[in-house]
Image 1 (tube, rainbow, N blue to C red):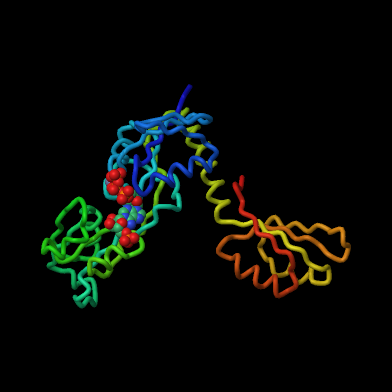
Image 2: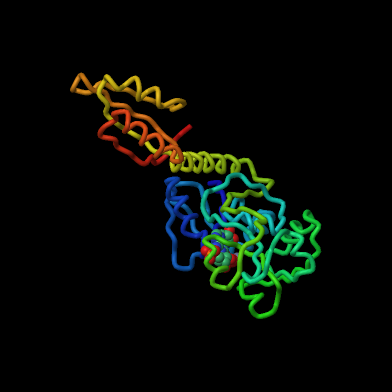
Length: 285
Ligand code: PRT
Ligand code: ZN
């Protein structure tokens, strides 16, 4: 049977969320001890476990058909592959940081500096765009200690909470890239692989959409019903049902996570009662 080969990180920050994404898509995976590759039990998918830095090359070469990798790695490696979907996890930013004690007014302050990074291509590209002339030192790990040991004046590295920079006496001054995990694909997928990828993308999008939404059920006395409805503009899938108590109705709708608290506070003030908030597993569009 035709299968789609997906590359995911063998271990590290993207591993758990990548496995969870497959699980949320109802794809069952048995992970053995050697963990080099495995086959999904109920979907035509073969899973290859690789170092994240190697995934773009394997995608370009067609060793894997699709892969989950940080946008930062994907853009740094400059392989001929295509981003199919952003995945909403592994969020971080690629940022330039300098010692806290230094005064920083503008980007020109970076002229003539030595910068340590594991992302030489993205840093060079950024400096060229900004007409900055700086010396780039490529190093592969523990970039944050470079200024402290006199290896560089400043660094460019991934930041999420900012605590690594803080602990090393550094401050963020420029953001080069906002990054998150993406699903990328080989440019020349075979027809069967393309069909399977589309099925997988359909599931991923349904899971993503569901994560950003909540299902709300509330009760309201009929005298407040009009007002409640008028405060739900643009809400799709609005359902109004009579209750056994004929003076009250039940109102059901789906709301985006970002609008959730604002809408609920308003509705409560307008007389909504017994508000139930339910997570949605999938939204099939
Ligand atoms: O072994 P392999 O090569 O596969 O893994 P790796 O060690 O190269 O990568 P890994 O697992 O550390 O990161 C994988 C991906 O996770 C990265 O390519 C990013 O896309 C994403 N990601 C998200 C991060 C971070 N957040 C992150 N904070 N990757 C690294 N960091 C590091 C950063 O380099 C710095 O050392 O965490 C530190 C900063 O974190 P804060 O929270 O202190 O700011
Ligand atoms: Zn890596």
